[in-house]
Image 1 (spheres, one colour):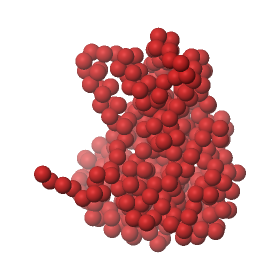
Image 2: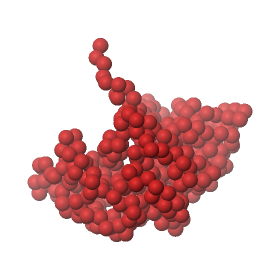
Image 3: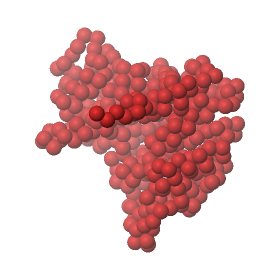
Image 4: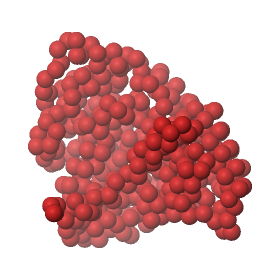
Length: 394
C-alpha cells in the first residue's frame, strides 16, 4: 500500500465544492435544487472581456508568458491597485496567478513550518487552516464574532501574537460572514503591529469592490508602515464574474517577490495567455457592468436580510460586503451541519454549515445571494417550511 508523507494527511478541503457536487447530482436526478451554497457570481463574464480572450487566441497568443504575468497586465494591476488604495504599486511587485487560492498557498508555504504560528480568521475561508496544517505550522484562530459586526477585533488579534507568530491572515470584506472591519479597528491593529516588525500579513481583499451602505474599503496596502510586509490577495473572479477563468493576482514586498516568481516557475510556469489578455480588458475597459452587479447584489442582500429574519428561530445580521449572509440558527435547536445537509436533501436548498468555516462557525449557516431574487425568495420559503415542520427544542 502506498503511503504519502504526513503533510498530505493534514490537507483539508473546501466543503462548498462537495455541496455543489451533491446539489448537481440531485439536480441530475430531477430534483429542483436552489443553490445558495457556492460562492460565485451568477452573472456572465462581461462580453468585452470574453472578446479580448478570443482576440488574443486569434492574434496568436498561444505560448508561454513570463512567470509573473505579461507586462501590460502587471502594469494595469499596479495602476488599478494604486488608484483604489492610494498605495504606490510597481508592476515589478505584481504576480499574476491561476486563482486567488494560489496566493494563499504560496504565502502560507513561505511562512509555515513546524514551530511557527499562523493567525487566521475563524469563521473564515477553509483553505487558510487547511494549508497552515499542511505546512506543519500551528493554526491560531482569530475569533470573528457576530457581536462585533463580524469584524476582527484588533485587541483580540494582537493578544494572540507570540514570538512564534510568522504570518497573520486578514480578510475584509469577509467570507463567509459578509463582515467589513472598520478603518478605526484596522488602525488599532496596524499601531499594535509596530511592536512585531518581523510578522508578515496576508491581506485577502478579493471582495474589496463588493461593499455596501456607503462604506469604503480599507486596504492594508494603504498603510506605508506595513508595505514592506503586506502580501495583497486579489483577482478577477468575484469582481468580474470570472471564477472559471482562474485568474488572480498578488502584490508582494520587495523581499518576497522573487521567491514568489521562483515558486511560479517551479509550479505553474505561467497563467494561460488568453486569460491574461482578458484580465487586461477587464481592468482597462468599462466598469459599468461591475457597478451593475454590485448594485444587484445590494438589492438581493436586502431581500435576504428581510426574509431570513422572518424565519422561526433564525436571526440575520446585515452583511456589509461580499455576497454572503451568515444567519444565526442557534435558536432553531439544530446544529449547523445537520441543518445544512437536511435543507439540501429534504428542502432542495444548498447552503453551507458554519463549522465548515471553523470552530466558531457553529450556530450559523452561510447563504450566498449570488442567485436571482426569485430563487432567493423561493429558497427562503422552503427553509421556513422545513423549519416549521421540523422544529426542535433549542
